[in-house]
Length: 211
Image 1 (cartoon, rainbow, N blue to C red):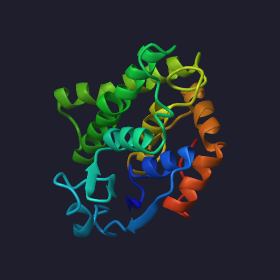
Image 2 (image 1 turned 90 degrees about the vertical axis):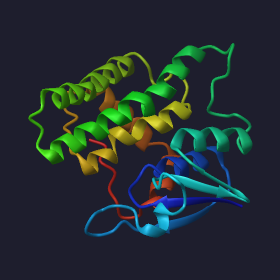
Image 3 (image 1 turned 120 degrees about the vertical axis):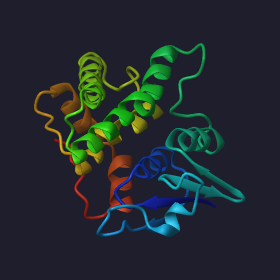
Image 4 (image 1 turned 180 degrees about the horizontal axis):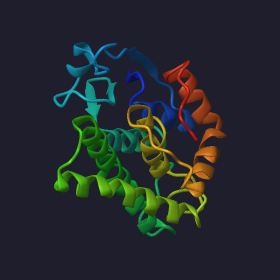
């Protein structure tokens, strides 16, 4: 049985959502954050060498990293659904946004969060933080002309993209008023039954910041 080791209010939300979208059966094991530090407990950090969420186990396999897990589940259990394959329409767009989510958007959000916590003031750090502004602007421009991040159909790229615009803002608030296309996109996400089921199972009582 596929087991999702879910750290509360974390990127492992993505994996629960993926399984709900694909109709893949899974066992959900919850881990609570330390109430003081808001970090993962030692039990969770011990699951993988890097010690971060998400983590899954599948028989003898233990796998971490959001992108690796999404790709593994989609191809092992979902018949490759939610992925655009070479030769299909929109393949290059899918590849770009699939990698942009964790290669540029998420790291920029993390740098911005840490810099704010440390007080900023360093011009190099300020330059790095500006990457998040560019990431928001790029995404806003994209979603002004596309229903979903990779184009006209919902894909795994959407599952990776949403977290920095929603749950991540629980740790570092950011106003979405200047980004009407992103807000409309998040509304479409929130209307998906699989997303609703996933959030209810993963973090009941947590209100995902969609506005």
